[in-house]
Length: 397
Image 1 (cartoon, one colour):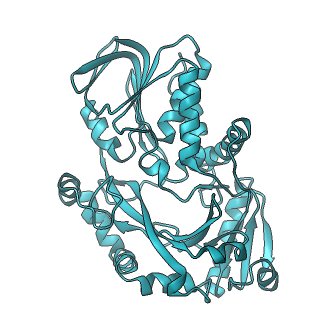
Image 2: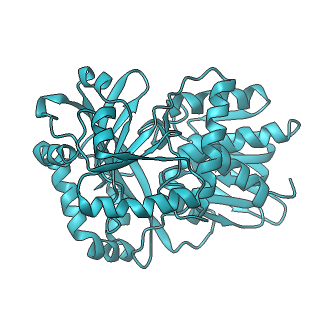
Image 3: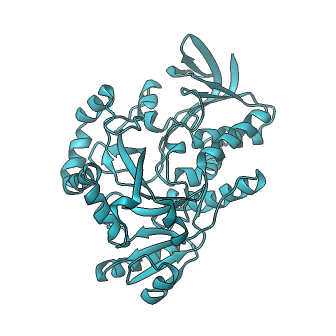
C-alpha cells in the first residue's frame, strides 16, 4: 500500500501535522498510524489544558516563536470548529522580595517575545484574587484554557473528512528507508510512503533508533501529578495562578489552573516516572526502568538535580508537603479542599551529558522527519509545529 506521507503518532502534534499537510495537498494519500485504540490517549489528553502565551521561553528560541504563533492558530481553529475556550488570563505571582526581583527577567522575556502583559501591585492583587497572597504580579491576558483532547479529535475528524486515513491499534515495529521510499511495518502489515513524519512523544527516541538514526539522548518520563480542588473554590479564583519559576529548577512549579467544565486543579509536581505511559500512581514498566538506569545521561542529570528531585518525590508521597507548596501563594487552602488525584506523563529529552533539552528537537534524513522532543507548550504550538515542519523540512512537497 503506497502513500505520499505516513505520520506515526496520534497525539495532537501528529494529528495537526497530518491535518495541515492534507489541507495543503488534497490529492495526496496520507496515513496516520496510532498504536492506541483512540487518538490523544497520552500527553495530549492528560495535561493542564492551558493555551500558553509564551512568557517563559527564551527570546528567539523555537519554543518562543512557535508558542506565540500556535496559540493564535489554536484559538482560530476552536472558533472555526465551535470548540469552547476561555481567555481567563494568567497571573504570575511573586510572594517575597527574591521572587519580585525575578519578575524582571519575565518582564524582559515577555517584551522581547511581544507578549502583552500588565503590572499588578500587591494591593491590586488582593482585589483581583482575594484568596491569593503576593507582593506583586504580572498579568498575561491572552493565556487561556481548552480541552486539547477535544481539539485533537476534531482535527482528526477534519483530516479524515479531507481524505486522510487513520489506522488505530497500529504499533510500528519496523521502519526502513531507501533512496526511493520509506517502508513501515505494523503487525503483519506493510505500508510504503514517499515520506515519513514521526511524532511519537514518549516513544520518539525508540522510533528514531528503530529507523536507524543515531541518538545522543533518551526520553526520561516525569509524572506531573495534580489534585482536583473543591468545586466551591472555582468561582473564587478568577485567573490561572502561577508561581515565579526558580531558575535553578528544571520545571515551573505547582500552580492553580482553571479547566474547562468549571473545574479547578492544583499542580503539577515533576517526579521521576518509572513508566513512559503509566498514568496510575506507582506505575512501573521494566523496559522503561532499564532504559533509564542504563543511560549515563540520567545519572549525570540526577547528580545536578538530586535536591529538587527529592523535593518532588516528597511532594508526591506526602500530601501535606504538596499542600505546603500550594499555601505559599494560597494560604487558605486546606487538605479537605484537595480531591481526587490525576496525572500526566511528561516525555522529557535528557542528553548524554545530563542536560535537559528544553527546546523542540527535530532530526531529519532524506525521507524522514522525527520530532524527538516536543515538551510543553507542544499542545499550544501543535498547528505551528506542523507548519514549521512542512515549511522547513518538506519544502519540495
